[in-house]
Amino acid sequence: MSKKIKRILVANRGEIAIRVMRSARELGIETVAVFSEADRNAPHVRAADYAVCIGPAPSASSYLRGDKIIEVCKSLNVDAIHPGYGFLSENSSFAKSVAEAGLIFIGPSPEAIEVMGSKIAAKNAVAAHNIPLVPGTKEAIIDIAEAKKKAEEIGYPILIKASAGGGGKGMRIVENSQEFESQMDRAVSEAISAFGDGSVFIEKYIASPRHIEIQIVGDHHGNIAYLFERDCSVQRRHQKVVEEAPSAVLTPAIRKAMGECAVQVGKACNYYGAGTVEFIMDDKLNFYFLEMNTRLQVEHPVTELITGIDLVKEQINVAEGNPLSFKQEDLKISGHAMEIRVYAEDPFNNFLPDIGLLKTYKAPAGVGVRLDSGYEQDMEIPIYYDAMLAKLITYGKDRKEAIDRMVRAIDEFTITGVQTTLGFCKFVMQHEAFLSGQFDTKFIEKYFQLDLLKNPTNAEEAQIAAAFTAYMLQNRKTNTASTTAETNSGGSNWRKNRVTLG
Ligand code: ADP
Image 1 (spheres, rainbow, N blue to C red):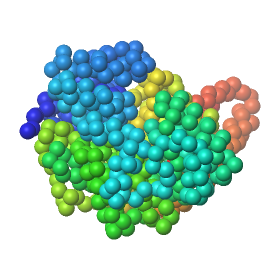
Image 2 (tube, rainbow, N blue to C red):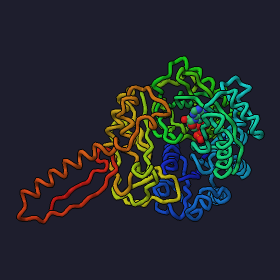
Image 3 (tube, rainbow, N blue to C red):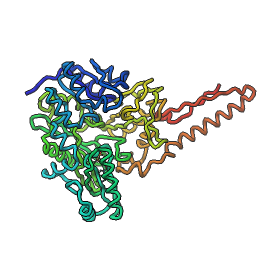
Image 4 (cartoon, rainbow, N blue to C red):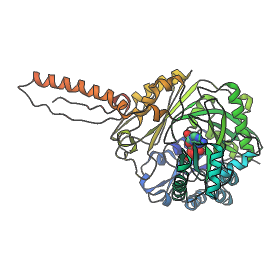
């Protein structure tokens, strides 16, 4: 039974809220934005047909208030809720309340969200389907002595992981048996404080792995298709920095095997909607299931660019009860796409969020460039939320063109007022290991040093200083020069001090 959706509430903010609204608009569906008091003037509020303030700035009082969001839906005759990513997107009780209120949740069933929300439950659910798993414990650890015995069997180094973990948090590497107890204590207390759940388990630590994930989409009729892979191996503290599709290392045979495996994972939880099955791959290209994310992923645009499928439209299509709009054999990879996450973070201050006023915000454009952004010039970045300003995505006929285009787009992107990760991402794009495609999750650890960002600037500054001195010498008599320095975190203007000669 299908039901045409006429009005969608987007329970999110920033770039993802705007991205969802764009597809809805193309489908002739009206949109409702919700916003916190801190987001009154945010672009996502203006992008919607209707907008409702749902509370004060902290997420717990606004974007996480599922009850208020459902109330707004009722008062505005909304048919469906799109949760975006983060906030309520993987909250099974919210998905359940949405259904109970007679609304459509644009996402999977509450049961699928619940089982995949726990890494241990997820592994057990897929184990029966012949899915390769990283060697490790199948249950939460209760008995430390027994767990230690298991760790010896698996062989060090091992990884202790929080079952409820996410965002790269709650993981501890244990190099040898002497460290086992102390790391275990830390892992459990971290898991309790970050996720309110102290369940941890052990996995073999895969040396030099790649992170490869498969996009799947399923409908309510039992069809599930895979939309190939994304390679998200460039990570900082287990968090993705650069994503691309396709991966530079997959063969067609491995791609097919991973795709079919991801479909099996979907089948294991009767999946419908868009989801991502994450795998870790060792240096011999053996792959193992890590976890499944039951929502639209931050990096979904690279898949859209290489397949030509609008994933949000497809989410809406299956949420209406229609069959998938394509068959597996219709799908093919065309070209190459690259994405960087542009954060208001200061690489010179340990990548801490650099909150402030966006004095200049000039977006890149041109052939093969897509910018999914939640910000605009003269906007203050609120301290309450994630510091991601935008996702910059480029497309090319091949990997090289996508990379060249990314470097060009980074150079065009001008942001002043706050420090950003643009220069850092440019460093990645130009590094020979990245260019060769031969890199793993240790890329940043291995190759990145702050000096590499500073050096070109220092040379530039030295040149400017030399020119300035020459000018001063020439104009000794009218020695009235004034200098103004302005920091610029955009691409080629990275930390360039602009010297104005008066
Ligand atoms: P989260 O839910 O916090 O994102 P994941 O299980 O998806 O956690 O893992 C995040 C990242 O941590 C992976 O992309 C990988 O870089 C690293 N990682 C996870 N498991 C292992 C493992 N067994 N061996 C080596 N690295 C791992």
